Image 1 (spheres, protein in one colour):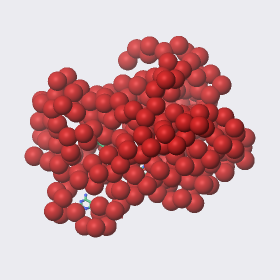
Image 2 (cartoon, helix red, strand yellow):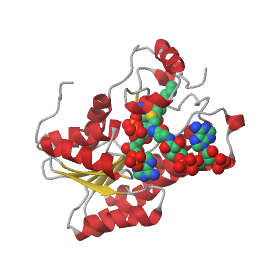
Image 3 (cartoon, rainbow, N blue to C red):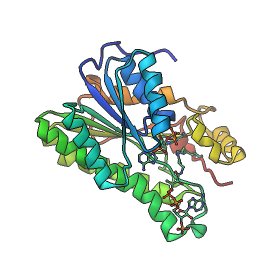
Length: 260
Ligand SMILES: CCCCC/C=C/C(=O)SCCNC(=O)CCNC(=O)[C@H](O)C(C)(C)COP(=O)(O)OP(=O)(O)OC[C@H]1O[C@@H](n2cnc3c(N)ncnc32)[C@H](O)[C@@H]1OP(=O)(O)O
Ligand SMILES: NC(=O)C1=CN([C@@H]2O[C@H](COP(=O)(O)OP(=O)(O)OC[C@H]3O[C@@H](n4cnc5c(N)ncnc54)[C@H](OP(=O)(O)O)[C@@H]3O)[C@@H](O)[C@H]2O)C=CC1
């Protein structure tokens, strides 16, 4: 996909992408790297992370990989501490790590519901808070982009994820208020169905039915998410905070569901 941005747009900036070892997160990291940023990719699976970091370096990108479990506050604190010890300042945080499983609400155990809220909502909050403190320590502004998913019409078959991600959208607005005086802009991107390996866990017939309903009848590409994120992090979006950008082929109007 053609990159519409200036190749030095993020020169001198460092971008931290959670879940940056795969799928959309890796595409986001690659795009920032291509636009001159140093990128830090962070996730749990070290093998996959190292492979992703190598692929970025082979493309000439200054990339660092670090372990994090965003559900664990100590692990989040450790990530930021490691960066600060290495003298690495983060300018942009992309909260991309997340996920869920499809299950009807009646079948969800309390623990199953809690695990998805814990990952997507609490994990995102912990990363945002650690980043804001990091910005305060540096006395520098920052930018947060939270990747959610298209949940504006409800999310049948994924009640836990819909609730958690709607929570992140509201969190985005609240943090935009609270941290405006720190010079931190906070926005979200809500992708619809995006072509990544992670979709293999969903019913392909249900996915196709969702796509057939869309106004733009195809899956989105990770690179399309990456370019939207780059826009929101760029000076061109310097007057934008507290928003959620739907990147979904119109799914926020038409609805789509992993449940048939
Ligand atoms: C139109 C459709 C569009 C779809 C758009 C969205 C696409 C994407 O988001 S792509 C996906 C990105 N990646 C993922 O989703 C990652 C896959 N999921 C996970 O990593 C995990 O499921 C998890 C993080 C969400 C949960 O992990 P964890 O907390 O480690 O889970 P446990 O194994 O400890 O189980 C906790 C609890 O949850 C119950 N559970 C787990 N999986 C399922 C399942 N498939 N169905 C039903 N219940 C499940 C599990 O049984 C545990 O509950 P208890 O048994 O009551 O203890
Ligand atoms: N593909 C799609 O259609 C859509 C995806 N999304 C969202 O976009 C994001 C990326 O999705 P996609 O690339 O498709 O899927 P992936 O499964 O490839 O991405 C999820 C990433 O999150 C990381 N992750 C999961 N749990 C944790 C954790 N506890 N701590 C740190 N990292 C974690 C994973 O790495 P590791 O396992 O190594 O920790 C992985 O890199 C997710 O939040 C997803 O829900 C939203 C809408 C649509």
